[in-house]
Length: 162
Image 1 (cartoon, rainbow, N blue to C red):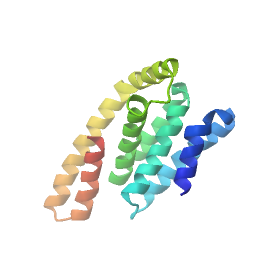
Image 2: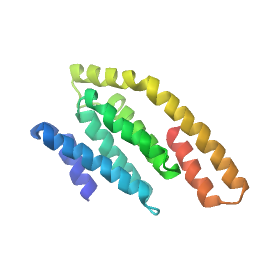
Image 3: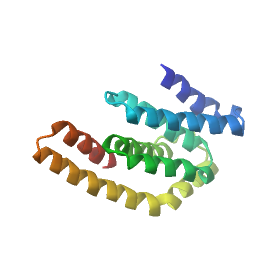
Image 4: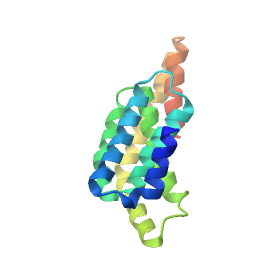
């Protein structure tokens, strides 16, 4: 329920908030993703809702302010397969929210968001490639060693990147 309320606030009422409140909402969404990444038993729905919320806050915000948040998302990914999975999900939701789920975006705003995405491709694509390489190898290695839980965690990351 809480995720839905936050998503509604971000999606429908973003412009009503001041700059400081918008920054607090972005920070709250990032902290929520971090919290979910530390949990062991979080469901797919919780992962999706928390990463989608962060992506939506970024979409509503200016691409000029994305770099610090995306840097933190990338840093989270190095902590383990679960964190890497969530980082990939944030990047996917951000791209999808701008390019597919965009009925509410006016032309000028769309152009700004697309330029923001394109400007970050030189950093994002190598990051995603590195995650694929790392976690695919780890999934195979842990599966061979008989550790199915770890193999599944790495496979989830590969799936999220793809």
